[in-house]
Image (cartoon, rainbow, N blue to C red; front, side, top):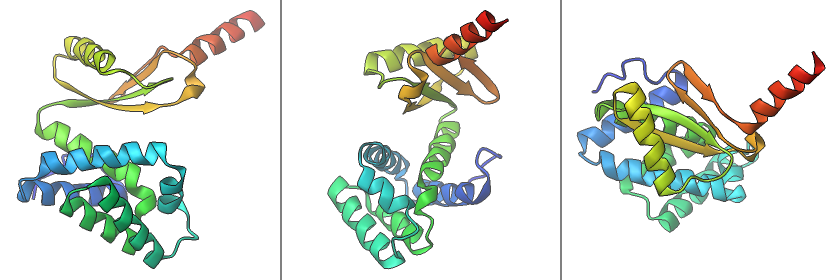
Length: 184
């Protein structure tokens, strides 16, 4: 069993560590992380899937059947599919985003990378992601895995978190600071 080195914590961390360890032991870590990336995209794009994973009104049986159907439709690997079934039966599908982040952080640490949590106002192109990763690598001296979320509320720019450091170049923050300066 791999040590998680404090990278992930809490209930979602235990699930993430379990999936990570199973993927490493089965030599399918890359396949599992690809399935989790597909699932992350589906969660972001489908309000119905988000409801299935977060609603307390969905029974265990319905959640398990629904998530099995989603896994089949998305073509997820057998380990990830079985893991989702366990989450559904344990009523832990709501923790799925945190579990995915945990698995990604453990996989990045295994590859010697550091994970940067990036919030953007709109989806970043592959070229933008590559350029951002290169800039962060130059500044941090380590390979960087990007975990990108889209939040239109920041209006523009980026918010980047690496460990305890945060760089907030969002337009919303700049406008808030300007508003405070004008009030003074």
